Amino acid sequence: MAEIIVVTSGKGGVGKTTTSASIACGLARRGKRVAVVDFDIGLRNLDLIMGCERRVVYDFVNVIQGDCALKQALIKDRRLDTLYVLAASQTRDKEALTDEGVRRVLEELAAEGFEYIICDSPAGIERGAHLAMYFADRAVVVVNPEVSSVRDSDRILGLLSSKTLRAEQGNGGVKEHLLLTRYSPRRVANGEMMSVADVKEILGLDVVGVVPESPDVLSASNAGVPVILNGESDVSAAYEDAVARLLGETLPMRFIEEPKRGFFARMFGG
Amino acid sequence: MGLLDFFRKTPSSANVAKERLRIIVAQERSTRGAPDYLPTLRRELLEVIRRYVNVDPSAVQINLGRDDGHEVLELSVALPEDARSGSSG
Image 1 (cartoon, chains in turn green, red):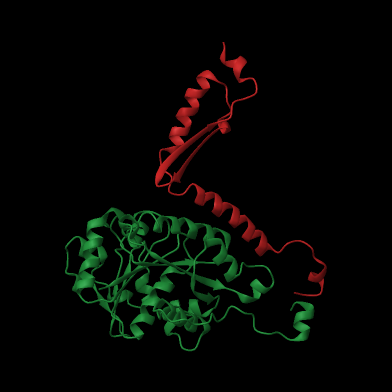
Image 2: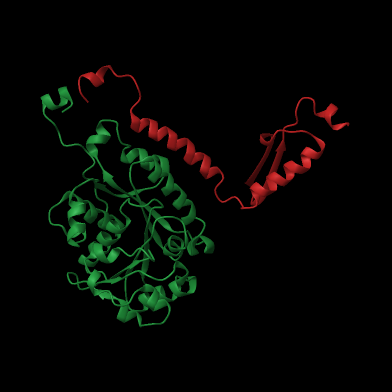
């Protein structure tokens, strides 16, 4: 039985694809069979973040339209044996993504024995975003501690609780989690950024992870290596914790406190 | 927090953000899940009412609530002070 997890946010640029890639890698590193699917038709990017952009032959829409078999479109990750990528179509129109087509592909992935299917949602609330969440069992809502991102996340939470298969069936709905990215403990301490507790209180949801703002995210995407695989960085550890929590482990939240500063730095706000 | 910040009394920008979000999120949640026809219904009702009474557009409130498993459509019209004299002609 495959579990379908949508990574969504409403607002663009908050770290959905980075998060999808890292969660997929984190699960695969624990031996889970994982497929990560790019729903951003026309703006394919997951392949770049995963570092497999030159191996895309067939894509999601090709599979839906029967141009190829699912197996031909799945790209096997070179680092992790149990991880596969399904790229978004780059050229065709967005109408190509159909309800029935998406359902069929997800069912086929489950039949292939994938335990987790990670759906990387496009920004916005249009068809791609709708279909990315429609069949989900769980949702990871990626949010920056910033007003427009928090408001858009709330809008997405409203859609998750009404416009999804689970909501329509009335069997408990989609299980929702918050994941904060670009978090800066220093700015929170200075009162310039909302805290984890603030965002949690406004949206009324549990937080599955807090990823600190870090230059490592850009260097990882430059290299095509999902940031969770990036050695000893805080970001990597934060995503690793988030994956553990998704799997039901209870861990204390790290990287949300500012490192202690010296007397002079505190006196003069350095 | 530096020495100068100690004398600053204005609320932090993070607190301002939080308060603004608290209000707008509560407001948007209250209209969430309401049927799409509500705004049209409200406008058309307003047109009919205004044939008889000259009410302000904001005087018509429509709410959809739940009560014991029933959906309740609540309509409230605040009539102006001089409504009676206005409707006789």
